[in-house]
Image 1 (cartoon, rainbow, N blue to C red):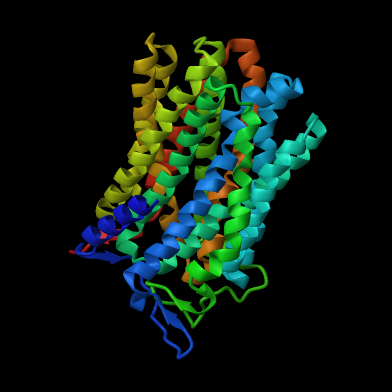
Image 2 (image 1 turned 90 degrees about the vertical axis):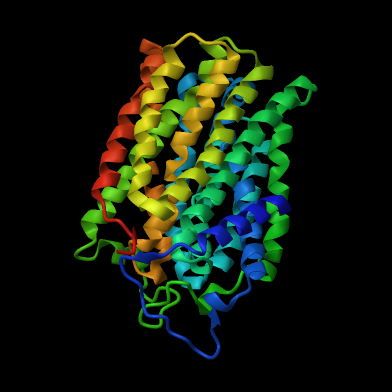
Length: 438
C-alpha cells in the first residue's frame, strides 16, 4: 500500500503544473475554526487517501463476492440459475437505498463519520454470509450488505473531492477505481489459489474483520470535513448540507433533467456490467469449460486491466475533459462480441479480457464529474447518483437469466454492448466541468 500511495503522490505532483480552469468555482470562505484543505500538507492528504483506499479495497472485495463466488454460492445452497442471479438484484436494491440515505447522511453529519458507519456495516454484512444456510437468509444478508456498500462510493468521492484540486481528481479517481479493481483481481486470483490448495471458498469472506477493525481509526487519518474548506471553496459558508433532504436540491429547476439523465446513464452502465461481467464466471465455467483452478485467473486479468485503465482514463479526463472518457464505453462495446464468439485459448481470453477491463474503467472519472456538476455541500449526495443506476441494473439478472436459459449465455451477454453505447451517448450530451485555459 505504501508503494501505491507513492504512485498517487507522484501522479498528483506531475498534474500540479497543468494550467486548467473549471466551469465555475465557488468562493473560498474562511473561518478561524475551519481547516483549509489547500493548507494541509501533502503527507496529510495522502495519509487520508491511503486510509480511504484500504476501506475501498475491502468494500470492493465484499461487493464482488456476488459475482466471482456466484457459482459456488449457487452450488453450496442448491440454488437455481435465476435464484443465484437474483443475488445481484438483492444486493443492488440495498445499495440504492444505502446510497440515497447514507449519501445524504454523509452530507449532514460529515463524510468521515459516515465512512466509519459504513465500514462497520459492510464488514458485519460480509461476515454474516458465514451464517447463511438457505436462500431466505441469503436474501436478507445480501440486502443488508448492499445497503452499507452502496454508501461507499458517494462517501469516498465526498472525501477526496474536498482534499484534492479539480485538475487532479481524475487521476485520484483512477487510483480509487484502480483499488476497486485490484481488490476484484485479488479475489479472483486468491479464489483460484484457494481451490488449488484445498481451501473452501468461505475463507474469502473473513475480509470483513478488516474494515470493522479499521473503522475506529478514521478520525486519526481523515480530516473533519464538517469544518473543512475544500479545494474548490464553499458556497454560502456551507461545508455540509443544510436542507432536511439534500436530495431535493438535485431536482431543483435547471438541474432536474441533468439528474435524471445521469441516473439513466449510470443504470445503463450497471446493466451492461452485470449482463457481461456478472455472468463471466458462469460463462467461462459452463460454456468455455475452463476449470475452477483457472477461471479466477482469467477474470483476474480483466480487473488488472481495469485497474490500469482507471489511471489512464483519469489522466485523459484531467487533460481533455470528463466527457472524453466516454469513448471507453464505445470501445468496450466492440470488444464484448470478440470475447464471446471468437475461438481462442486461455491466454488470448486473458488478453481480450484485460483490454476490455481497460476500456470499462473509463467510468472512473464519474465520481469527480458528478460532484463537480452540483454545489460542494452536495458532494456525497450528488455522487450517490452513481448508485441510483442500480435500480435499472437490478433487473439485469432477472432479465438475462431466463433469456440465457432459452438462448444461451453468449448471445444474451451481448446486451451489454447495446447498453454501453447508449450510456456513452448520454455521457457525451451532458455538461463538461473541466476545460483547458484559452
